[in-house]
Image (spheres, chains in turn brown, cyan):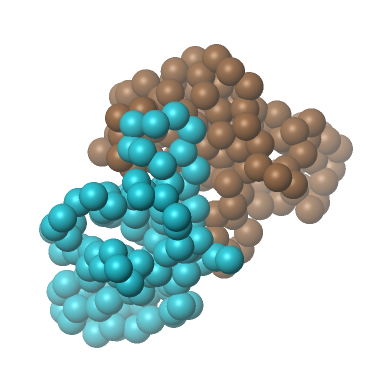
Length: 115
Length: 118
């Protein structure tokens, strides 16, 4: 299957700082990328969907100013957690697909810990 | 209402035996897709199998097969000849809307933790 690379795989940051997570499709052009958040032992909750070259569509309850998503190219999307707080600690995972894909391919995930 | 329901939070299976993981879904769309993903303890999501709503035959991928019963709105995953490496969380998911459409939301179930016993 197609490869999606997510970086970093884990990050620890101080409260109040910002953290950027990258999601790259390595061998295909991703017209759409999805960002999910997963709390321990829970399911994946969709945060936002981004299409290349346009603004991200956020799910209800997700703060746009806190979780900045940029889909600058067909192979790269970034999620920036601004002014991170301990409650933002979670597992963040991206997925990517093209219009003709049946399935979306997932990155390895990023475990964010805010101290 | 839940879009995807997985009623088994945890399952045990003996190595080399078959196991069925349950999934029911709720949608009013005529065109939709159903997926199963595996999530090991390392966290990555591994795509296993896909079934389109218009596919007449049940999907199969190696040891994985999807028991699709459209009228009952169920899409159970069957793993044959279980292996120790199959121990993981398994998520059922649904995409609503046409396959080649634009924005398509994928909703995940709560997952089933499968443990394979030697």
